[in-house]
Length: 226
Image (cartoon, rainbow, N blue to C red):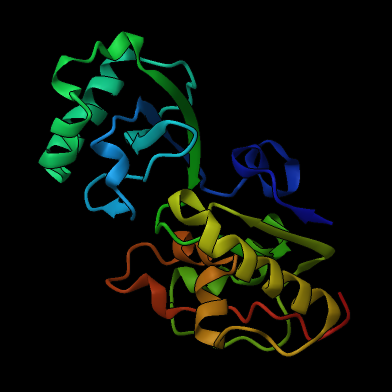
């Protein structure tokens, strides 16, 4: 079983310890004009604007850290228009954005799912209680070396926390999980696999007083069958 349900992963008993948080984002669909239709490439900086499609430019996006509401807000449309002015003044002018009523501009809001280190969670899931017991020595010695596997939950994997870059990270993380399940060669360097492992947050919570909590590692590839 692969847990791949965004923020709702934290609603499940076995993955409730995942430190997921929401970041609300709203985009706007601004009607194209004859002048703005000349745009042929995506503009991207602190915000972005896409070429017209079906008569509209998609612009955005806002960041509401900790917010999970998907209600459209005129104030955030105004924020998107202001970011467009900063990103591309010529396009802002070509769209006549200064005279647009933010409340009348079509918009959509969604919620990103992110982790504290803004890397996805992808890999096998451990039993939290048994993990904390088995690796209790990390609380006093972050460099302690352990023998044997972590207490994996057989056949249970996760991929979530893809944030704003899921179109890039989700496919490769899906390939990673598939490789772990099938016992195939990993598609990523082991250092990256470790950086994505769900158990990294349990390790960090147990050595949180260290200057470099990322040094303690748990091999995310079980030696036995999934």
